[in-house]
Amino acid sequence: MKKIVCWFSCGAPSAVAAKLAIAEVGHENLQVVYQDTGSEHSDNKRFLSDVEDWLQHEVIIIRSDKYADIWEVFQKERYLCGVAGARCTSELKRKVAERFLNLPNGETEVLGYSIEERGRVARFIENNPERTLWPILIERNLNKGDCLGILASAKIEIPKMYKMGYRNNNCIGCVKGGAGYWNKIRVDFPEVFARMAAQERDLNVAINKRYDGPKRIRVFLDELDPNAGNYRSEPSISCGLFCQIENDRLLTPKKPVRQKAAGE
Image (cartoon, rainbow, N blue to C red):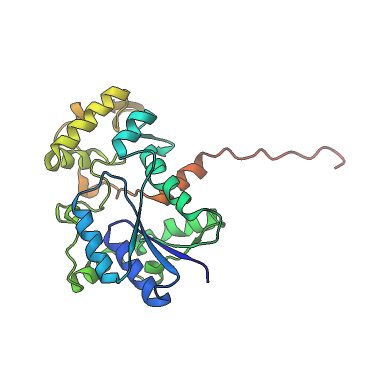
């Protein structure tokens, strides 16, 4: 049997996905793996331990051997995010995960993608035939709310970031966040807001923007209107191994098709 890797993100859906996978195939041929970015809420350690007890299965923790956290990535790579995605995702998640998998070995990968992301998963499977995904939550028609309910039934306290009103349990201060997200960070984690504002100025790049007609205008965090944006209405922040793979594929130039010469 091929090895099954359940990517656990310290979020409710990935915890439930791992639980379902273990129930279906057992413990022997399955690994539950957490990618530690060094930049998530300290409560994640407690949540990981609780989930480990619930699963009755060890959670393997992997991390970059090059960067301690997102801040070190920003400083050394001199890059936050852009059309090529977020460099922190590439360095702290994609490269770390692919090294762990030692591709291509044909592993089956389980991720916490719920029914809300069914279209995204279908596109990924179509565009990445070399990867084997097991979308177990989608197969069971489970959404994120269902997963939170399952954890509540198991008496597992949800991560602190969820309690604070964040929709995802990502790094604190995600460069993919919009104006509303960053204004929430400003209130909840003012030291992170200040640090990212200084990081923007150091690199002379801005995470947010506004438009004056067709003209794109950078909006640095230290000049962001405290009332700008609406976090609840902003797109959910996706950050993980497959986010960066999708970006990489979008940016890979397509090989030109050679036109046949006359007579060929």
